[in-house]
Length: 105
Image 1 (cartoon, helix red, strand yellow):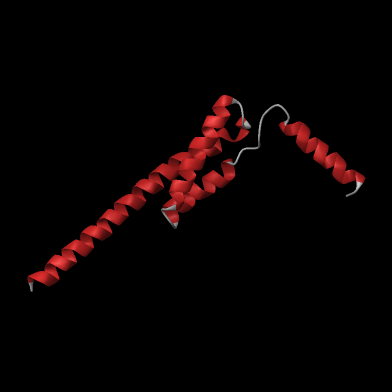
Image 2: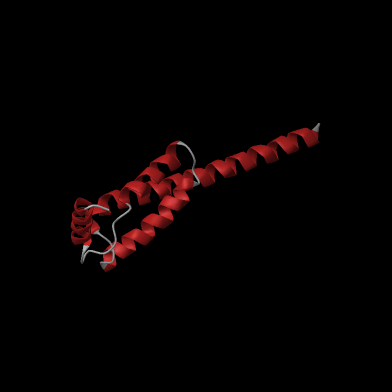
């Protein structure tokens, strides 16, 4: 490790000193978006992580700079989870109707 690397580390530590741990807003936002576009189960992760991080921000344990990203990812995670559950219910209904149709023949 060189002297320049030590200075970079000090700058990073000074940035977050007193503000808690760094936020994960970008990750939560990406998970929320992916839950709507690709895989609804990721919404549950975005929802749970967002809820936890927003609570830590409220208590001052996490950097509040990413609050907006975290909140949007949290909301998208909730919406993605709801869509995922509704799609599972629709698939289950489709299977039940298919079984009833085949059994009726």
